[in-house]
Image 1 (spheres, rainbow, N blue to C red):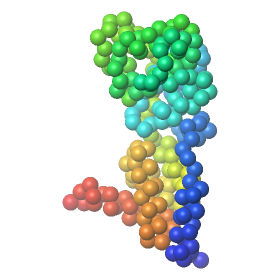
Image 2: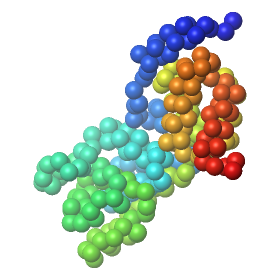
Image 3: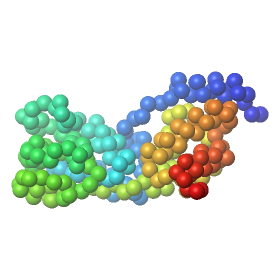
Image 4: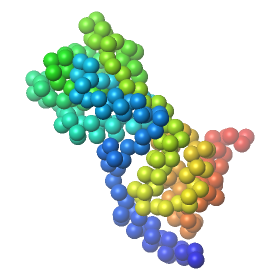
Length: 231
């Protein structure tokens, strides 16, 4: 028997109250062929060559998720604008995120040297270290020698796992055929998965409907019309 509009509204209010926060843990990371090799390289810590590794991949592919899980495991200090002086970092594991969108200067050079001296350094970026601009010749040679773990764009396995995780965090149980339908038709990115789950939740609430393949089709066709794909 289909729930009444009032019942569906109360169910959504309860879901929002019980919504689970995102957790950056290995247990919640979706593993597939697109990231398995990078995961294996990360798991080789603390035996990285020279004590350092660059984790590289496109936006929202899972770099920060894995990096924060590693930081929790290793007790790493996240090196940011408010990080203590370099001397305070000696002997610690370190995480340096978004290296390709931050100044590649003496600070990174010193962090790499600390890794040479026995610390551990994980660097994340969207592009490979050989493409990062720097005017320091010694840093250039160190960047070129960095071991790189590459995460590829999300494949079907990742998208399916991410969708299930996002629905689960909202305490939603869509019809089973919603997952393969979305995976084959949505934009292939994690931000797109976040967006489609949010819009499905909102539309289901507004129209007092359950989340089915028909509702997913309505969402995606509206997106196609918005992008002008039917013009």
